[in-house]
Image (cartoon, rainbow, N blue to C red; front, side, top):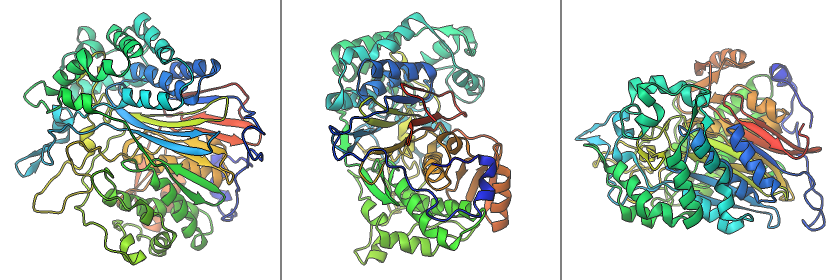
Length: 581
């Protein structure tokens, strides 16, 4: 695969054709047994100590899921603002011996007492900060159950060993990262993080915010992990830890409805992953409530738009227009598939994608969702209210390939930074219920992403695994970043496959987020300013951004082995047993 620099990108866009880059087939064997995995392992994770924990498990012969559990247990300690035991997430797993991808949904679930209007005050929508710090914002955490589900399915190392790195760090001490410390002074001014029991004492000892490099311990977290390691998930979903979670969620005048029965009833759901063809590749994604299908939509819409836009920044324009169409459909149709019909297959139908690409939204106009039922001659899809979901930039992502070529793409979250700012048993609780559409009008159609008891809120999290034409591993990708996640992740697919970038160049390349009427362009990285100017000339409403909160972690199977990189916008790192290129 030929590599180019970001500086050269705009010039090369003049000459690239639609088939400029074909994926490199990495394994021509008919079976795994005939051709064992030759590349060793690689882990790309959001904190170096978490990367080391993953590498330690892989070095012991662990499966990718063993490494994922160990890495995330460390991440929950080291970057509690992003994810942890009090949250949930999605894990997409490729098992090479099966040539198959499985999707495990560990998303937080709404308590049985949740109501569609619980974030309304009469006819008025509560302020976002009031909503996301309330007890109503806390959903049943899915992380620990998710650990158990993937370990039961594929784990090779003993369950107890997976928590050793995190327990050691929590008990003996670790340095506060610059990422965690940087947000604490401002959050003291605009949230209750420095006031609520537990979080105030932990993050603001003696009333002062933690500083980067300061060594701290979290004995509560260590004890929680010890109990999970020795007693299993029952230690978390019943008994003292569950009681601490419920008490914290119900506390205060704005306490929520979470109960012990809600905790005990939580289950991980294995949903079908969806794989869609793109060129010679198969893009495999998590299905709703994930936004994973957007990766298939954006890539295929991009190709359909390219013949009419063959030169220069017009390739960026195609990427922008593909995003705008896909986001409009996602915002309207996506919700919890156990509570609302999400027409994923219809949205990915080639006839519908043809129709959408034939009428892209004019620059400056507001993108409107399409109607796949009308295009395909079927009964009309459900009528939903306009989406009112606000999804802040938070979350974490990691990508891992083990010594046998198995892979995991995992995106985990507590939603907003430090979740609901509520604390239990050594960790923060999520505010994931504000990922539902908070606005509710009983006289209007229901939003697809409406709050419903037991439902799981729609998420932008889009863990993605790409296979080649032989269903061999080609790429593992994903990112945090709230509503921008689909755009961040799609950039790596388009950048590596079509723009012929290396993994590092694709990650480093300026982020472009085209959801709604505004196109946000990261101008602090070249050639962001040039792209912003070009898109403005086309007539788009461009918002210039100096920095983005992406945290892309990508692994590519190349001609010479595994190539991986971590997003320089965060603190991630990559470790492997073989040289990467």
